[in-house]
Image (tube, rainbow, N blue to C red; front, top):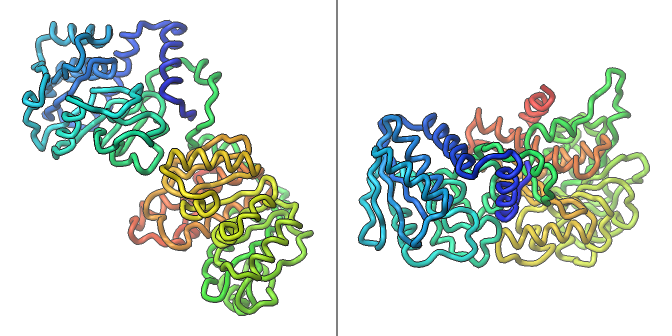
Length: 503
């Protein structure tokens, strides 16, 4: 699913109106019907609604929704906020329709003294402002938003929480934005929905299709996409009946140090559970017995050091290399990593301490092998590029880094962002907070190493790896709960996740 800017969405709306063709008031009715359908499935007809309406087309959506709700048994009150002398054309049409129906109480809000009493068991609908906003709220609208946010009533935002910008909120005041429990976005999510500092405004968001014209959606370029199951399934390779282990690649995992052998075990098991043909795990000497016992399916390569990574084996026999989980950041490890960058001409995935070594030695960035995959969390990312003012700024720097260094980067978190060498950004749609646990990233490294070893391009390996990692986490959380989830559970649920993708 492409993610467009607010300006682009307005262009798509206009194209749909011109080329479907459909009148703008009828497109608004289509949107209102989708809102009504969502509400009807969720709430009892005994539920009371208070709909707060602004002067633009977002307000028109709210008025059309009020008319549809009032045709049933829903109790509806509408509050029209007088911040402009005129309403948009479609908003005025829907106000006239609602008044002619004569089933809904319509009150005007001209000052803060007009704010209604909000009951805890009501549902408030935010239809104040749409996604075209470009400056922070002030005046009456700001006061009303602050008032709505103090209530305990459930709050549903139409298309976007009022006050929130569609993309960059670095100059916005998020305290003056609606804090919705649910946001019902038309056709596409907004880019700002995918950034963590906006979560208190957006709440749980859902996309409602309203039939915007497919031609303009297909033709219009966007650097942003939201990855779903169908996209991942299209990227998967088929496994042939006469396959053997040599076809699915031999991967080298460089992982572990004294006290951190668990990272090597988790990453190795994840690689083996993700279709790799052969795996060799390079570890410090003192980890030999641990690995041979815990992961008998992996071959073991032994470092000359007892406790850290200081060297690597001949790379000739490997299809891909993964490095970083638990290797520590000692000087000898830095030198070995530097040598690896100079010699490696194989697909490479870097995580954890490999990234921390790079953060301590910025010159290494310029020696990164082209097309390699980096999987930092936020702190590791900022060690590489410097501090960021917010998530939008961080995303811009991530896209720039991938283009400049010609690498694929996975910035881990909710809606993990994957950027490629062309600066495109793909947001992942799987995963849950239960995965915020030690070792989760090690599992992801193993999965991506496995896919690279099987010959998947770097971007496909990252997209598939992140998606199936999150899917395994979702399946584990469904059965075990989020609080109880540990990284080993992700490995245990990988078979179910892969099976689901193959169905």
